[in-house]
Length: 291
Length: 304
Image (tube, rainbow over all chains, first blue to last red):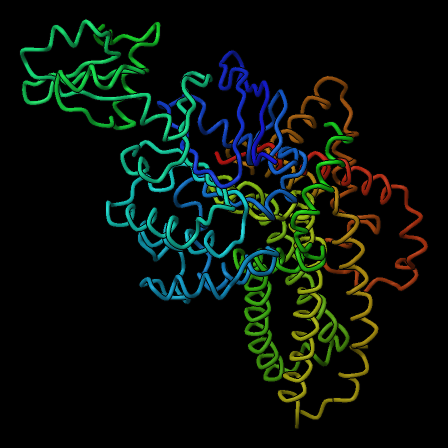
């Protein structure tokens, strides 16, 4: 059974189309990254999946309709929809009491064990914690919930690099176990590149690209072209080109690797580079890219 | 949406892993505790009112013992009036706390974005709204009852101590105050009037709290005011104002607001009479409608 299944999912805010009839299917055990520019519809898609907004079209999450069954769904789904949504007035121990009181799948011992590794005291109030500590606290809650789907919307926004690294390390090492599914959106694409199993680019309410990371790696290749071979390389129709330290780096989609190897050094492009290439090749975008 | 499909997939999902359900009572219990953690004024304000009152009472009793004149001239007033006043003060404080609590209950969580945390937990919007309604219609009346009884008891003890040896009749002090009888009427008043009669008012405040894009206080009080003014100007009538007045003063008449009610003759407080007032049932129906809208709003509203 697919964890998330959407068909013709649409959401409009007045004249603005936030989601333009997207189809989506996420299988169990995947870590899907939803990548897109601001206003692309990422958060709208997540909110629909979490039952926070009404939508048109068909959507099933773990076999349920999120909009009408949010409370039932939340027994099996966790989410961090934003950093720092923990109420400032609450005491850490009260927060644990409350979640333990209302959540059938919350393991208080796990949360406390995680917190013991941090500098967060159970007696502190959230307002006295730093932003990084609040994120750790929320992570402690999430990790102690035995959920089947975890949704993260910009979970590390505004955190320093140490916390960000720790955040994904904890998720991968202590939480993810192949029977869970994680859906994440972030602008810090380089951080999640090695974490993801699946990738989806979304722009202006439409899905631009969807593939597994293996497909991504075999489909896209970046060549640091030797200066004398630039013209030959350009003839092979790269989808994007940029300059680094005076050398041209050309991005190819579905090209013949042996042919490219003769032109320079091959490497797997970063998600960010492919994203920029695909976005700038979109009709209506200002930057022309290079063809 | 499609119930048939839901039913089928539900059995599929529950067969895979049946999530143990948490009983509704436990969800409400923890939701109420959460409200008390967030809004400590629910118990601090009535307690503070009681302490301030007792402080004033001690000074007044000490003075009257010294002056002697008041007690001798009006022995009954000297005893019952402060007790009524204490009840009225604590009830009034709790009433004001209830209004401000209700206005902030569903607005505050949107303002500080914590609604995103609450909605990530398996607590339905119905339970959230009902537990927030429970605070003004049940928790606050019961709390003010307990605090009032404690205050009145302390007052009696204080009077006894202060009047010892003053030559006054201490037995009369205890019998005249008819402690048990008064307490019962107070509880009755708090549960029926503050709990049931005011329910539509709290329903309205919660609805505004769930809806208002900002300034819920203004949204709650301005529209009724505008209706009253427009009605007065257009038709030169005051029907809407009368409805509001009737709702605020209660079925027992204006006395209930001044704290006199607990001392009213028992006859006016017979439950049969209260429950035969159509206004009660109309009010409860209106409250139910407000709450239904509030639940829908809670579901669709996100952080501001």
